[in-house]
Image (spheres, rainbow, N blue to C red):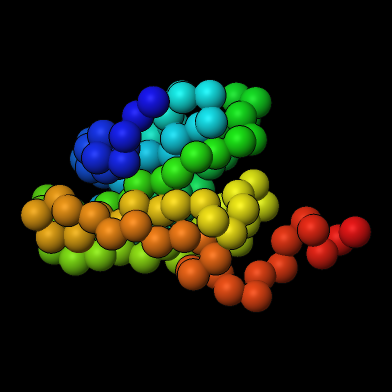
Length: 137
Ligand code: THU
């Protein structure tokens, strides 16, 4: 099984493929599925701005569209394009909610910071008192 350290490396690799001519801000993500497979994502911007998608959602949607719904962890790395990651990058609110659709509150996120080190946080910390499919019952 891919370790958090390896997942972080895959997020950093995905970050190199970010398409960010407008913000100049490059984000990479690597999503580990419970079956051991990994889906990478990068942010993809658009001249019309609105269609821009975040790296995390690209990774989740790639996985779900391939039939994966059970996830074990997500690594995320963001920072100025062409530069090393200089600080921790917390996923946006929309990405947190998308993760909540498929992940429990103890789902781990490995957030990359300076020198490619990382901090582990769980989804429940990032999205407390969340609305989820459990509230639809
Ligand atoms: N971005 C992500 O890829 N993930 C997030 O969680 C927040 C922001 C991207 C979108 C845009 O291309 C750039 O970062 C600046 O907002």
